[in-house]
Image 1: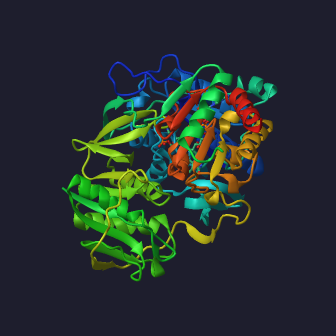
Image 2 (image 1 turned 180 degrees about the vertical axis):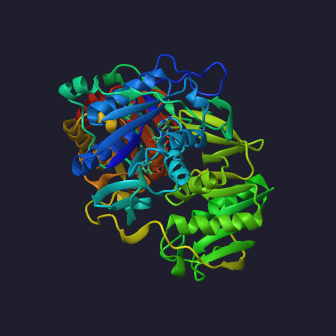
Image 3 (image 1 turned 90 degrees about the vertical axis):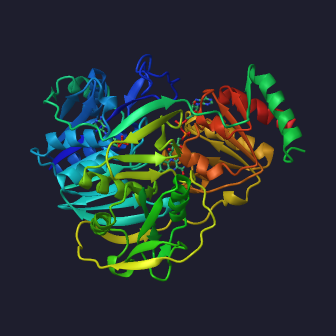
Length: 253
Length: 303
Ligand SMILES: Cc1cc2nc3c(=O)[nH]c(=O)nc-3n(C[C@H](O)[C@H](O)[C@H](O)COP(=O)(O)OP(=O)(O)OC[C@H]3O[C@@H](n4cnc5c(N)ncnc54)[C@H](O)[C@@H]3O)c2cc1C
Ligand SMILES: Nc1ncnc2c1ncn2[C@@H]1O[C@H](COP(=O)(O)O)[C@@H](O)[C@H]1O
């Protein structure tokens, strides 16, 4: 089986975000980068499928030079080779342009199964995976929380609202967007990190259409909350908090 | 300006979130029509044209079938906007429609400013204002962002025949496991998020909950990691709670978590990140390491 997993590198969400000079995205200076959380589940599922069926697992990311770190992590988790679609200004691309660029690369590769995250943590559009499937003309199931493959037939559970799930079946080729909790992503072991260093990272030419959406501006949300912010020594904070609770709520006697 | 509103139905029942698209269109002041794959027995209260495909024939959600039906309606209606809820239905169908038409999609719209769409980024720490460069454009609306006006009226129905049947096969629904605690009845809830760091630290959250005479809850990653059961999870895919006091320990305040607890009367957040979005709904945000504060709080409550 030939498998593709698409990953995005995103900043740690606990970062303090500054804006870029154009005011159209966050500044990429002084940030800690990691693999998009949803994509870790996608990589794990792809590795498990490869372990089950044999074949080849390719990991792909579109972005600037730093995304090689995320690719290396996926290689250390078990991908066989990596594809880096180089783009220093990838934040200017919208999901349609990113999906088109990935489709342009993957069309000739004829993957049997493609995994993506359900959404990226920074942009959060939940579009790239499903658009990619649409552009390739293959089946897709989004938000999966369970996956099993039997020959050419895949059964997955799709998460709906309030704990409800839908069990659905599809034949391959197909694309799956992975939800949190789908599996337990493995930690790369030291020997596997060493082995990953020898794996290929190809850089084919990037072909992408113009973006269909324009970001006019990015800003911090207006603080709606009237909430009190307490800082300081933990012992004093505890006293302050308890006296507020005594005053403002009816639950402390 | 004309908007095609996408209503939702499951197991023959209209989903009330459908009305959020109506509220959005009212705010925008556009003409509308509506699309639904649902049951003629469960029609929306909506005074306009409704394109209806019978779910009894279409079956439960099959993206290929819904997409074909919707593309036909778009061809006929020529809307400027195609408006979905950002729900498991909307976020699945919208990108398929947008990509097959090669048009723009803007996800999780929370506001409209001068005709441009505002969406969150980076776990709601940033807001992005976006302009689609195509017509039509596809939108999904963040759940709860556009308030439901009391809907009224009945639709003029135009029935759609179903001619495609392929793609994905729906097998069955699987309900969440029942039983265990019912957090929706708790007066006090102390919840643990990923900020607790490791499963052993859950004990200190439970101890605080006991000292306050309440229940303990959790955010999704704590449940996904298997540190506690799913019936403790608060949020869109867990329980919706409204206690007198909600204490969020090491929880960032993602929209899916907030949706489950924002009706709480009094919210205390304990978080090392002063900018964590939980601050938006917190009456008190205590900026500190929960591992230090929580045991002291418990001790003081017990003495
Ligand atoms: C369709 C869908 C449905 C979802 N449903 C749910 C749901 O029902 N419920 C839910 O909770 N999530 C849900 N999620 C996931 C949600 O988007 C977030 O990923 C999740 O809520 C994050 O959990 P968290 O706040 O515990 O973790 P994080 O976002 O990782 O936040 C951890 C927080 O802890 C703080 N912290 C770290 N260390 C400390 C310390 N020592 N002391 C104090 N604070 C500390 C950090 O500053 C940070 O703010 C859903 C997501 C999707 C896409
Ligand atoms: N630049 C990218 N390179 C590779 N994959 C991506 C990229 N952007 C998004 N994806 C994939 O598409 C998923 C959904 O992203 P998004 O549509 O941005 O929410 C992510 O979880 C990734 O799997």
